[in-house]
Each structure stands twice: as C-alpha cells, then as structure tokens.
Length: 406
Image (tube, rainbow, N blue to C red):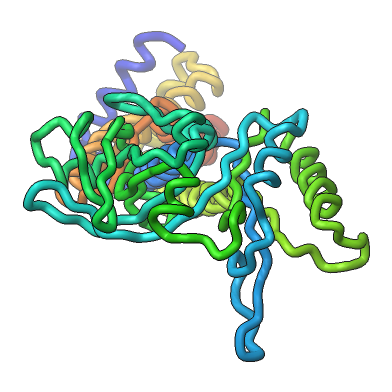
C-alpha cells in the first residue's frame, strides 16, 4: 500500500466533506456508546472488586443453628451451638489460615460531649487477619487482652470522626454502655460493603469483654458466628469439607441428622455479585455495538454511491494500467479511513462522556487501554467488512463499460 494511495483516499474524503462526515456519524455515535458503556461497566466492576477485597479473601462464615420460640423457628445464629473452642479447633485445621469467633451487638458510645450509636464486634486478634484489616494508628489488642477481658477497643474511621473529630483517639478513653474503654487503635478505612453497610462504623473489642461486660451471655463460651479464612482459594472446598466433618464430630451429630450449624462461602457469594456486574458490562457493550453495525451499513451505502459516481474515473485508471487489486485497495482504504476517523472522534466523545458521568453523577468509571484497543479494532473491522463489497464491485468493473458510463 503506497503513500500515493493513502493520499488519494484522503483527497476523496476531503472532496466530499459533508458526505464523509455524515457517513462517519454512525461510527462516531457507536464508538462513543461502546466506550461509555464499557467504561461504566469497568468502573462498577472495579468498585465491586475493591469491596470484595475489603471483606477479606477466601472467607467462610460459620453460623450457629436455629432455635424455636412459641412454635416458630427462628433464623440461623439464634441457637448457642458454636463455641470459642469450636473456633480454636477450626483454626488448627491444616488448610485454615485464621479463625475468629465473633459476638456482635449494638451500643451507644460516648466521648466528651459526643455520642454515637454503632455496632460492636467482639472478636479475637485473628479477626483483623481474617478481614484483611490493618490498624491505621495505634495498635491492635492482644490475646492477653482477650483472656483478661480487658476494656480496650479498636474503632473504625466513622466512629473516630463522629466521636473524636480532629482529635487523635489513640490513648483516649471512651464509654460504651457507660463502661470506660481505652482506645488502642484506629482501623484503616474500608468503605461500604456489598449490601451498602458502612464497614467503618464499628468498634471492635475482645470477644470475652463483649460477652461478660457489654452484652452478657447466658451460655458461657458460646459465640454468634465464626469467621474463617482458608489458606488459598484452591483450598476452600477442602476447608469447607473439613469444617463440616470437624463440627459434626465435636457436636456429636449423626451423619444422617441435620447439622446445628451452617457454613457459608462468602467469597463465592461475592464472586457471584462480581460476575453479575461483569455480565451486565458485556451486555451493555453488546447493545452499544449495534450502533456500530448501523454505522457500518451507512459506510457501505455511501461507498456504493461513491463507486457509482466515480465509474468513469475507475475506467480510466484501469485503462492506464491500474490493477484490480489497486482499485480494491483504494476504495477499501477510503472505507477504513472514514471508519477510523469516526472511531477517533467517537472515542474522544466516549471518554468525555465517562468523565462527565463520574464528575456529575458520582458513578465510578474506568477507561482502560483495552477498551480503546477494542473500540479501534472493532471500527477497523467494521470498515473492512462493510467497505469490502463496494471496493470489490469497483475492482471487478469492466473498463469499457466504465468508460462509456454517463
């Protein structure tokens, strides 16, 4: 393909500016829609990935069983069937990275003249490892604090902002249900969970402190649920099986009987949510791609008109020695050039639209190199596919008939 052929194609496009612009308009709209839809989809996917990462990786939650009150069965977690010893036994399984018993509740917290009602999580130090949660300032409480039921607390960023404002909370004393607690650390911000809850609106205290000094416990040693982190994603099926076998043995449950606990794979649930978003992103991109096809049909239509208008020009070119291949390449090049220029303008509009969506709607968007590469690849393919028929028609034209054409 020579530069002369490129220049000739460019002159043909410039000579019919308005028609060329209208021809590429479909491509402009199509590419802009594809870029915008994929950017929105990628942004949503990225936001969900961040949320999943904030939950922790390779997670299980073991819920205690159900109880019956007044003939009505209550939900999972209402029966005190799980214990601290169960959590410790699960943590000793070979494929388990960490295991943390959890006793949750809600309470009012007070510091100076500020008060804030928040969720209280009674847990062990392993809870931070299970949740992939770091301490931003200060330090975490220890196993010794759990054994002594110490009045120490880690607080989330939301609690820190509402109770302490600009003051450094570490070392200060807050009150939880009228009891003094020393703030030993502030947790890193995690943001919202998949269900929209603020993960930073939390106070974490030793599980024994929660049981004995905050919420009480009619069944000493029991916990509401246990969070478990598998050593790897590949080990999760084995861990789930081992936990079921272990807890059935510890609770003396016959093989054919229903268990008094339930094991949930949180990573699988999160991945299902992420997969749904990924599919929606592809569907939006596919819908937007329809406009690219419409744009391609427009290119083919205009190129057919151009071939008809330039029939005598084609005849003269063939008569002075141009080969069929040269005619084919010239018209094909014109179609691809129109398609790529339209793609370039459309990509710019798509990026601008994505920026506007993020700026004014606050929706996360992400324009990646892959999206731009896909847009240009599809535009080139559309130009070649829909430009081939008019170009071939020109290339196969009989020179004598072409020269006689009026």
